[in-house]
Length: 328
Image 1 (cartoon, rainbow, N blue to C red):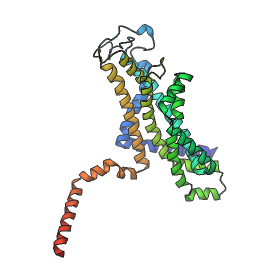
Image 2: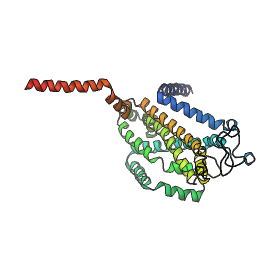
Image 3: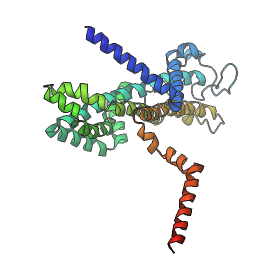
Image 4: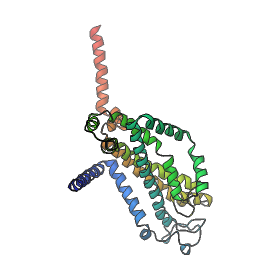
């Protein structure tokens, strides 16, 4: 019991230190602030939104322009308050992105570790499944599945997870192939540790930086995918999401009537959420893999545009010319 308490304290301290590192990272701080604001908006949507967009008794005239009563006007098709729809839509878009990202992280990392460490028939079967899943056209199959099993967000999350774990499992597998021959893994095997223990206590922590970074980026991608499906009419018709707001604005002719704010509002919401999760993902990758920053395109460009570097180039050119003249 004591060892479990100590392990929890160690895990808590490490988690706190990791969060502080993200906060000190400029891009990570921006991502954390925006994500925190989105989470608070989703949790307290009932108190932030001036109207309940699901309540039919709180709908007024259709297509109203922005005013003090309706900050972003009302929708052309139903007369719902657009600002309230934007606030409530944060719940759906954020929950779908985070839940799907976590599910993909768990499934992809476990299968990737199993394929890389166990090898043999397990590796062959899992990788052949990955090869088959990658070449399957996702959108047509998604349309078929949602038409058969319904348009609920449970079905949509399951579809995203079904077609989203393959790339992570491949990346994790390639890293595990390197870690399985490391000294600490060999020492654990010689000490008599079981394969399951080694996989989850030694190898999985070694690829955790890939999983964490991929989860943040996956959440961003899933939120875009959910918005795309809702825009195509494949989302849950009874729920309000940013993609559904875009679909309603497009079907109601918002641009035709000059109601551009009904399109701009959900578009900004999607942009901010994707931007925040991508900033978090890149910050986490730089923190867990410091070499990545020096190899990034931004660092190379900065290095090339640095005046000292240009001076070094010109100085080397002068040295070559001087050397050539001396030789002659």
